[in-house]
Amino acid sequence: MKQDEGVPEVRYFEKNDDGVVRFWRIRREGIRCHMSWGQVGGRTQGSSMTLDDLAHAERHLARKIGEKQRQGYIEMAPRAAEAADEMADAPLLDVMRAHEDKRYAGAWNAYWAGYAAVAGHAGVFAKFHDFQGGPGPFYDYLVLSEDERRALHFVVKQPGHDSRTVSAFLDFVCPRMELAFDGRSHHKLPLPAPIGRFDHVLFRAPSLCGNRYGGRIGGAVPILDCEICDDDTETLVEARMQGRDAMPSTSWDREPYPVIDLKFDLRSANGFAELGGRSSLREKTFKVYRRSMLERGIRLLSAAEPGSRFEIRNYRREILALAPADVAPQTPAEIDRFLLGDVAGQHD
Image (cartoon, rainbow, N blue to C red; front, side):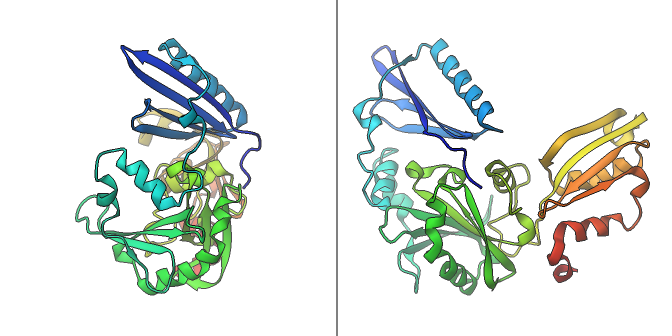
């Protein structure tokens, strides 16, 4: 669960476009690269990327720097305002206000309008977003630390929102919120008693939450044991929470969304009809996949030639290896029990 160790590497560049000075900054922290850019003295934009390993992150850093240098950016020492965080000791809400108001006058008032204190939980604020399209209606929660310099953030969609369940979640999370800021990418903790249908809580570092407001906001979400592996790396957690077909963590009435890691080597001399005649499909290392790929893989395996294999890894890091001859009518049910573990009997 630890992030790759080492002192962050920061590089700063500027370019003068007919009197308009633009900057570009990249900071590598272990396997993550954080970039920010904009007009000096104006609004800053940013993005982050998680790479496969330290070597990949270093190559990415070098490639992005090369791109900017070819565009005419010149490396230099950061300006004073860039080098030092003038609001390092300021309360988070003040930092958020300053950041939002850079967008346009009154942006903070528009952003914060509707947030209200949550009864029984000091320093916790919630806002209801009554969206009828897109993601639908949801509640947005912000949990401030005791010194008000950091916070946890989580969202609950309305169909699964229950104030008593949220209150029980806050009772567990608030005393432990510093786990999101202890230098590890994440913590998976068992609950002493179930909260709703959930038996664990996942705390996420700011690096897994977009490093918003200078890395001051982490995350917490209730999960089932089968949804995150105890030994997952930061990259795997990010893939499960934010990747393709990610866990619907904001839906607290969801069905179990188990870990599905797949590795396979499927071959057919005559070609797979489902793949338009393609004769092979391979994944050399375990990757996070959606259930639809699992179901497709089993169909392809049943039509594959001998020697083909399909491997499934669950949240316990156990591996179920299947050959074409293993596919039977009961296979899907057996796979579900393998993926869900102790949860299977509760959701039959």
